[in-house]
Image 1 (spheres, rainbow, N blue to C red):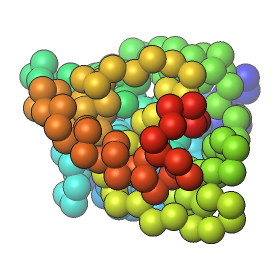
Image 2: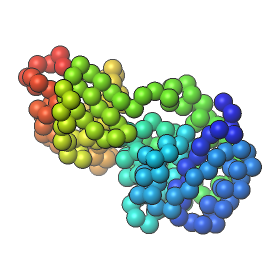
Image 3: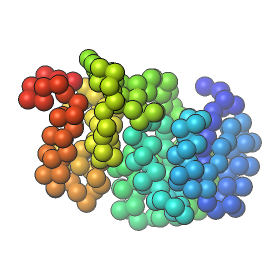
Length: 218
């Protein structure tokens, strides 16, 4: 893998840290894009998908953990959190939301570069270049466009239903526990609230499956 071709999206509202990252990463041949807010980062990632995201959690508009969740609805891009939050609970929340690694500030450029190389190796092993369109029988989900169709007809999903579907697609052909679904969709504080999952899963199956009573649907 040639580092000169690797696009990195840096999501950081501190201009001094952005300058530091810009100098250090550009010197290693990385192509940088920068965003100061979560909304800007999500829009940029959709327009020009990065191969790695370096993300601060303390953003001025939306929390970085929410940015991770929204990215994970359609992308498996490696996400490396770079934050001043050092509490274990903050690290758990970010990792449970879908971040791949967590580095606390202050940090050294050498360690950051090493963690980036590890994340990019994992990405290569998993085949990041796979299509963002998931197809099962007559159901098609375009994760990048956030569009769900069945027999060509659009299906409207609520934000929670779409997030739940995205988690199921990411773990296709794997066993996913109720607690895991609750943690990834609603957060760590909701892992015991199984009734949330029952209600939204029933609604999702009703919309997606021609015969929700059957258990052999995809």
